[in-house]
Length: 137
Image (cartoon, rainbow, N blue to C red; front, side, top):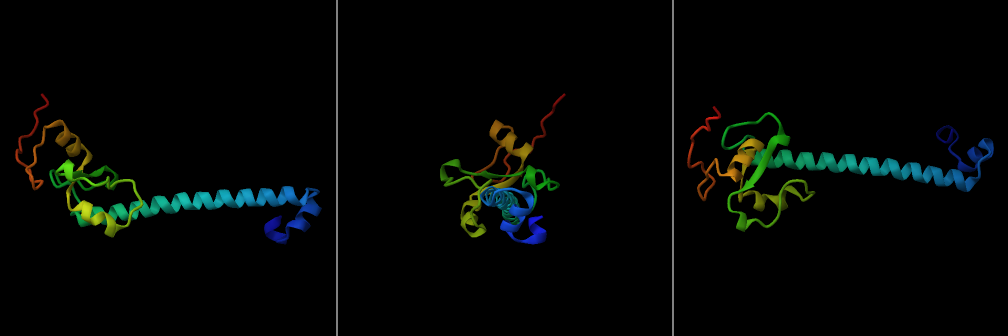
């Protein structure tokens, strides 16, 4: 009704609701809408930044070539002691993250887990040392 009439006092009088109650409700409703929009915008911004970062690093896992789902791609710091901050999940600009990104390689989630488990070994430049396939049988 408010959207049609556009006046809180008139709507309150017609609806037999106090002006302050209706005004408070409209403010609350508007805040929730703004909060929802902010969350959606933040998710979109983070996804856009991650897409730029993934593209910058070649767009696929540097070990196995996986490229189907951006959510399954991680940034692995070659030397953890040089790590200044974590890349994923933040809202930092592309330019700010780029210097940290140069210390990383792009790998899929599976290869990333295998690196940390010691199944995949990398040299100091992030190149694969061993290329032995794990035999699961």
